[in-house]
Image 1 (cartoon, each protein chain N blue to C red):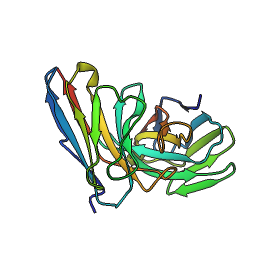
Image 2: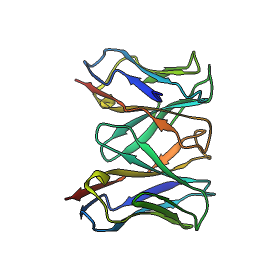
Image 3: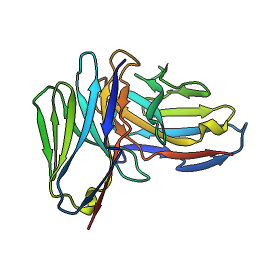
Image 4: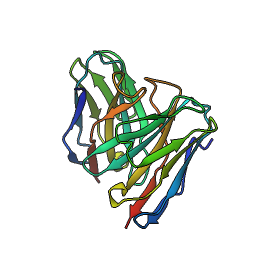
Length: 112
Length: 112
């Protein structure tokens, strides 16, 4: 089983460019999350979804959009990338609230 | 405000030198605390869930314990392969549904 798969693993963008980060899970989880991890800041929730067709804002949602058209996929979009969005992005999924989520191995994104 | 603090930020041990990592929290109504291990370039990997004060969980050289104010991750006779960053987190029921509040982690280095 693959678990949680994130693509791409690395990406370099120029300021103002757009891109989409892909997350796929094969565990039939209802909940999916996007986190960012920055040095000295820990993991912070960007957006999350409690089921197919639903999305909600997390702690740091500005500058990002998400979509959950299929239960197994959760997409994170950057419409106009900014240097402050340089980070490592982690996708996670779980069966529900209070259940420890499984994480992917991250996408390392640099915005120049 | 719910928050979690991990100490120390970094810990260097000799192989076989036992020690403990601390995770202290202020949460209104704790309903679970999770420990994760994160290797460089990887996503967090789930280790333990603790639900109530007095509870203990063990896995190989690791033992997690929980009190009303803090959790400890005890490492007995560590080996170099135990080197990683250890994260604690708890579900934030008062905020974004299913969100985890993460500590900033303790980076453990075990030298042979």
